[in-house]
Image 1 (cartoon, rainbow, N blue to C red):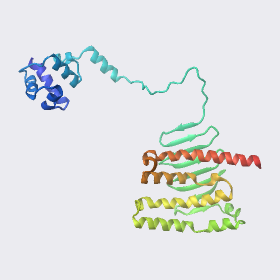
Image 2 (cartoon, rainbow, N blue to C red):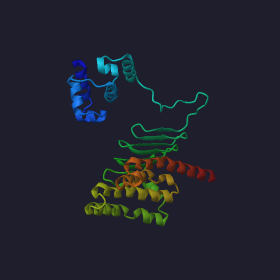
Image 3 (tube, rainbow, N blue to C red):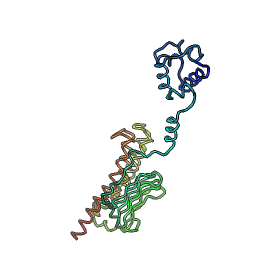
Length: 284
């Protein structure tokens, strides 16, 4: 074996991060035999040459002569070309398609139904639900907002206070149960639970105890939904966020990896609400 070929064998072995012992074990020869090949003191037989070419991922001609074959060059040229994924979907040319609901996972989760209802979820903008009637529910870093046909009915101010439309409240003051429930200091209970949980250090302590504060908009929106007999007024997106956080921390239903699926229940919930409201409209 000439010295050029021996040097190539040494180079290939180093490029593959193999020691002489490791290479010898792969081929089934002694370390001394590998050393002699790389010093041009001996030549591997045909079977060992083929085995070396397989280990180094080169052709036999390239290993012996240092020149790449046409097949190797063509293969590398093809590898540089953009490959079409075998998983790419190709519509059937003989099938007629119609545009329906829109689902996108770009920068969040976005669902738009054919009838005009929309749900947009992202870490930047929070959870936003839009109904075709003009109702909107928002839950994000700036708090919770509930709009009904362009009018802001419920929102969270900069101090975390849940502000409810006064006229909306007056519509229900005649009902003594509503008056009792709406004046019940639930916010104080939620705040006390938040502090007690945080100081105790149980179940992740402060890292998770703030979820108690999410129960405040859930409580007041639930009362409004019950007494106004409109389930769409319930802050269901806030409940979905709370569920996602609980699933993640306690590793329920796959934890963070699959817990996000709970957000897909938001459009389902509001679709059901839309059906209920449309049924009530027909009855009236």
